[in-house]
Image 1 (cartoon, rainbow, N blue to C red):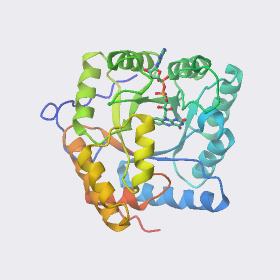
Image 2 (cartoon, rainbow, N blue to C red):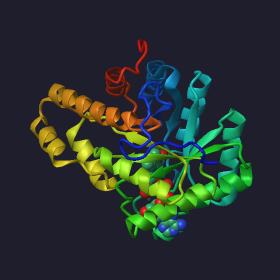
Image 3 (spheres, rainbow, N blue to C red):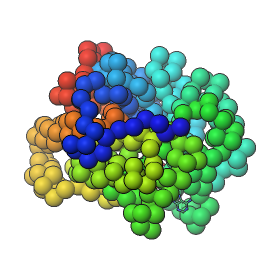
Image 4 (tube, rainbow, N blue to C red):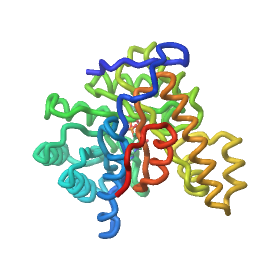
Length: 302
Ligand SMILES: Cc1cc2nc3c(=O)[nH]c(=O)nc-3n(C[C@H](O)[C@H](O)[C@H](O)COP(=O)(O)OP(=O)(O)OC[C@H]3O[C@@H](n4cnc5c(N)ncnc54)[C@H](O)[C@@H]3O)c2cc1C
């Protein structure tokens, strides 16, 4: 459990950039037939584009279980299409037996990894205390399924918005790893130093699990600002101002976004990040453009 070691601050334990130890791609469950047809095509392009480094595709789980069926069906469709798809899962307020049943269904599909989360709190839901924390799900998975699933958990270099303090957030992350999580995937960020500092703090705290940075390609101004404000990801002023300037010029915004995120990924990989987890928003081109710039993309044609 949690034995993959990696470097922290630049200059300490830096590793070669290519090949990275892993690339993964996150999707949300599509709601329409068109979206479903597109999902497999997109996943295949990314899988191909990631070459040998592509490790898995993951499918998110809607707040409060709102995509319970959608997530399962998307994972199943992707796996039937030859993609190593894995689910995100949160316990929410369901009975433990229902969660165990979901785990058993995934096991029947051949799934061997899950991303275990508390999940976002659905609007209109009562007190937060009713939601199980991610650590509870990690424990439930380990009790129920022992080590048949590799477990990834979420980590927050810029501190989770609900955390009482940065140190408490680290303590809770350690609790998740101690409970049996094998690896961490971070919330996205645009300050590379926030990741390196975070990895150093984790190592100092005895968290030795692999910590893969989450990467959000920049393709849209309003959506990025809104989402970042909600999840506590900081958009540096110099990025925010340029995105604002390119608001009505999609081509320039995308070119700028690709450049900025490519540079971020270069710094991360050059200084020890063990791979990259892309928040694809179900689109292949932005992620493929970055992977191409990094020299990671293979033949990604349909
Ligand atoms: C890689 C990644 C994938 C994601 N996928 C999804 C998804 O599919 N669906 C979705 O809805 N959201 C998703 N999210 C968002 C995530 O669910 C939210 O950030 C959510 O608010 C926290 O989830 P968590 O698993 O980090 O929760 P937790 O680890 O439970 O932490 C939540 C908050 O509670 C605190 N905390 C943790 N444990 C305890 C404890 N025992 N006692 C008291 N406080 C505690 C933490 O400091 C933190 O502030 C994802 C995030 C990441 C980084």
